[in-house]
Image: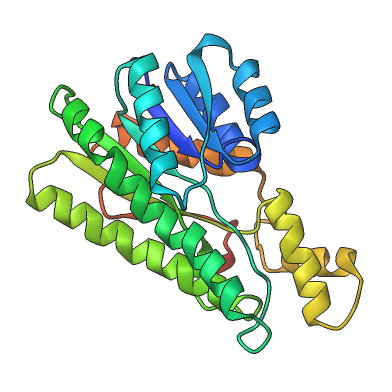
Length: 264
């Protein structure tokens, strides 16, 4: 189940956290993986830990030339790309009144422009590989529960993730209409214990006028009926599923992995 034998995946923002865990699970499932990130030292370390099945390439997802370079490097090393995981993202943690225009531009560039560029610039190789595969190629976009319901903490982050949610559905429909055989799905994590997750606790404490990050963490935990916060492996397993042929009849869908947060 969820095997990726013979597949090649490109994962943005994969030096650490959810991206790195996804790379690890994909290699375990039989894939070869290209890791893209701006954290070069950490990214190389992650790739080294995965051996010959992985390569690292610097990738600023807001730069078209960086996407072109990693696509070319992946094709040269592994022969093409079957799976794209648009994982790179950032969290702002500021309200509408506090955020500056420059901060919004940076947030939108990473969370929205990065997904657009990744999709556009991997499309030729995804389409080529799809023609030779029984179930085609796959794109998995990292959205968020904040792309499904409103966010008191960060409405601008929610705005970008809502965009990713609907872009996923629209891209799925466009590629199906054109006969590209590329499935496009999104995954929607709850609060995950990563560096970004820690940022949300700090921002929550700040927005509540305190410095009690532990209390903010407890408040976040209370919104997850399952009784714990998520870990990267929880999300990585969902990504591997969506990327695999086991999800061959899924496109334009959103997989919610949130410990029950949005069930309330």
